[in-house]
Amino acid sequence: MNFELSDDQKLVREQARAFLDEHCPPSVVRCILEGEEPYDRELWRGIASLGWLGTTIPVSYGGLGLSHYELCVMAEELGRATAPVPFSSSVYFAAEALLLAGSEEQKQEWLPQLAIGEAIGTLAVAEGPGRPVPSQLKTRVSSGVMSGEKYPVPDGDVADFVVVVAQDAALGKPSMFLVRGEHLNRRTIETVDRTRSHAWIEANDAPVECMGVAGQGWELLENLMNRAAVLFAWEQVGGSDAALEQARQYSLERYAFGRPIGSFQAIKHKLAHAYVNNTLARSNCYYGIWALANDAPELPLAAATARVSASQAYYYSSKENIQTHGGMGFTWEFDCQFHYRRAKLLSLAVGSETWWQERLVTAYEQANAA
Figure 1: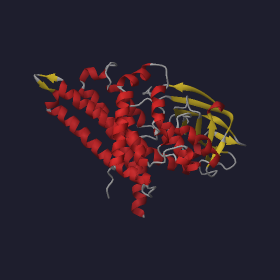
Figure 2 (figure 1 turned 120 degrees about the vertical axis):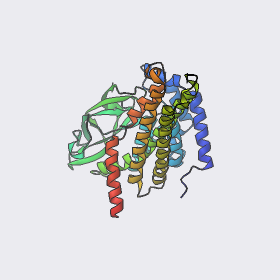
Figure 3 (figure 1 turned 90 degrees about the vertical axis):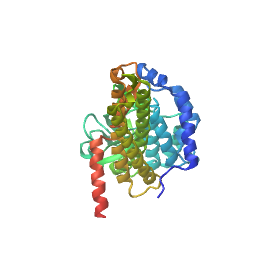
Figure 4 (figure 1 turned 135 degrees about the vertical axis):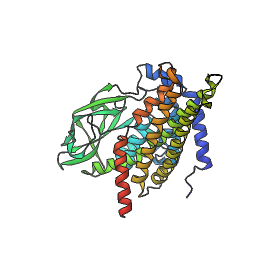
């Protein structure tokens, strides 16, 4: 089975990389990191004008109607550039949730707006530190209104609507709901990576719309998380490759004792180990995108495999990039921090690495049992 990208998909990657090289240099990332803006609005408009936001949205809803292969190509390049935009929240979470569980009215209203960047959406599950558990969700919906708080919510401070998993009081189990941003109280919270904003949101009798079948919110969330995990894994692979390339380039330019530091065995071993991790992660990501694009029953296994390997690869490459740069790599003026911050943030974006390791074991057990 050939998991490699087609020539057309490789062309999409080249065009995406060229656009981001021009419009998202490190100076753009640093501007958001050091400033007050939640994301780069000019870059967001540029991405929207290219149609990236509507990649997998059907043409009937204003999108391009392409496959998840093209979306993963774009995710990889956005990860490589550490782009400071709410792309993952709107596309991996909101658009995918609408396509999975949205009513026709919800799709008609929100998908066209998402496709052209006029609306930003996101997903809210966590209610503070710790792993969300269905029986312990405190946010509740009763008689069509929701009360409770969620945090951290990616891009929750700028989202026009939020997909929320909350307890359905009538059924005693979680359902998935859509709540409009104007009905929420919210404030920005600090994370390790300020180039991807997060928020605390609170609902006080906020009107909501049910998504999917009532009482099946957690099942829908599991499916959504598997899909998002593959897309985030491609972002992580893109970032991991970029961090390795940054380290390699510096090791060829920095001289010590009359020779490039890349010629020393200690540096060679670091970079070789990072390359092996990245190659393994990319291989697993190909498996993941195949399962996602074909809606294969292997998706839970493929998603967990891609997620775990990509998280490990990105953390290692970003960490060793700093080490390769030596003492200067730890300073604020160097750009090494961009990938390290993003690696730490993405490692928790759809659940921790430990959580995905547990899901991987469970998926293997179920596959073997079958």
